[in-house]
Structure formats: structure tokens, C-alpha cells
Image (tube, rainbow, N blue to C red; front, side, top):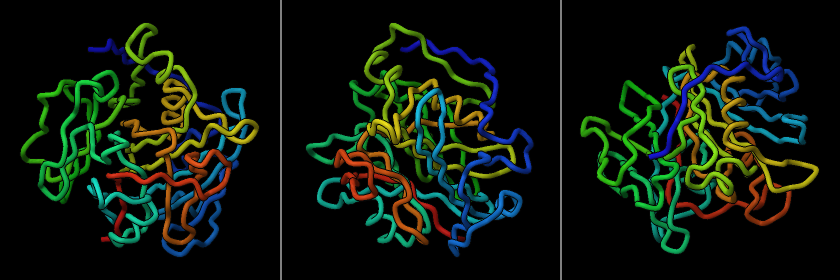
Length: 289
């Protein structure tokens, strides 16, 4: 099992540090339901917001998109659509009546089946394979009145608590109970996955009762360099996340909202535009209560 260390890291300057306004100063902010442009003051009080940010972060051009919603007013759901049911995040979100959606966890690209544990509507869909143990050490647990992002025992026998209605395992864990989780050089996947910059996706929660979905674009020189796992962790902390879990990244990373459609720049077509969505077999979608 990989060695992890919990430490507290300083927040990035890109975000306001006060709890009432967690959004990056340069972000463009919008109401999730109406699409109306919002000031940061109004966005901080809104039940659901989406936004985009283009800025120099970590000495490189970065493009970040996000959704923030109050867990008391919206619910997050796992969508399992393996095999012939797989589709783009925009199609899956529309099919399930969502107001927002983000790609899910890792999968077999040939068979379009999950390679991490997924539980949808109380039904087991897939389990974690041996090949995913180097990064799949966390999960999001969803119940009718509770949502949590937690670390899990990273082995193929883990099947999740029977009491959880929906579960999506992924990883690595980025932030755990307010502390950054760091990974040491030399672990499996260090050079190609942990330390290398890629497009990234994450789900997280903050101390004010909000859930965040975040996508970092990448693989576009001069537009979006992507982030390493350590940089993504620093970003999560700067947004005030107390718990955060990395999802599938690369060409799978995509964020969709109902008022606008795709707001990230999916890289599966090798072009910095909004057309390069990948077909995926699972996702996380947001629905209004």
C-alpha cells in the first residue's frame, strides 16, 4: 500500500481566505439554475454556483471550472452506465435530469466498465481491480440525508459499507479532515500519474456544507498545462475543501452545467475547445431537491 502523510499546507493566494467568499478573485461566477452572472458577494450566499477561471497558477497557464452547491438543497447521485449505456457527461446529465455533472472514476476503456468500486441505487456495479490499487484509496459515500468523502482500505476485497446507498471509489485522496494528503516519490505510478501534470477532476466538501465539483483542464500548451496531484491538492485547500477526492482525469475530465453545457475544455480530441468529450461509463450528477 502507498505511504501517505497528512500535513497542513498554506493556501494559494488565488482564493480569498475568509469563509464567506471562497471563490478565486479572477473567477467568472454564475447562478447554477438561471445562468445569471454573479458578483463574488452574491455567489458566496447562493445555493448553487458555477464558475470558470483562467490564470497563472504554479507558474503555468491554468484553466479551472467548478460547481459549488449546498448539500441541503441539492443531491449528488452516482450514475452507472457501463457498456452500451456509456455516453458523454453532457448526455448522461441530461438523461438523468441533472443541473450539473462531472465525469466519474476509472474504467476499462475497451469494455467501458468500471475498474473501481461503484454502487448505484443500492446495486453493486463494479469492484476495484488490482491495477487500480496504486491510486484508489478513497470514495464518496452518498445516502439520502448524508454525503461524505473518506479514505478507504485500498484492496480488492473492499466492498463498501452495506448501509451506503451509493458509492464511488476513486483516488487518490487529496484532503482528509482538513489536512493535505501527500504522496512520496518512489510509489507506484509516481512519475506518470502523481508527479506529471494532467487534466484532473475532483469532488470535495467544505466546512460550510457545500459540495464542490472541480475540473482542471490540461494537455494544451499555452492554454492549460494541467496539474500534478500535489498541485491539485493545493488547489483544493485554496478553495476551502476539508475533504477532497481525485476522480478519473486525462481525456475523461469534463464538467457540464444545465445553463451553459460543457464549461471545461475536455482534451480527448487534442484541441482546446469544448467538443472533446470522452464516452464514460459512470458519473456524478447534481439534482435539485
